[in-house]
Length: 154
Image 1 (cartoon, rainbow, N blue to C red):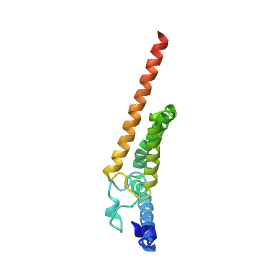
Image 2 (cartoon, rainbow, N blue to C red):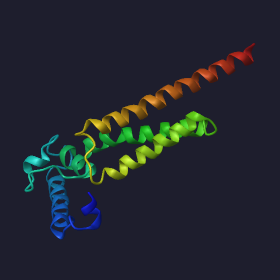
Image 3 (cartoon, one colour):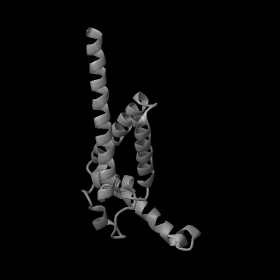
């Protein structure tokens, strides 16, 4: 890793391979834009015999437009729910936690350009923690609202 940061391990040939992979993804997508070529099939059709090294390229090539929309809708749902929890709890611990989860989501999205999320278990756990957190916090907010409403009725 240290040598990669120094630039010794990064060569033009590795850049050429990545560019070639992205060009293959474009070709695969053009040939099968609606449904793609099937989950985890990019490595079978690729000249490089490996995955595309990008979540976004892999999703587009293997699942097409329909699968890409289905795959990325939860990202929007997670982002909007964490934002809502943050907005409602800015001044307490839950607000800080939701901000941390929002930052984690942004990091995961940024890392998606060079890492595939859905083939590994770690990313799945990270998403499940975010979903669990906002689900519990939204439930707490709903209960708090119900208690306040019932107190007003008394």
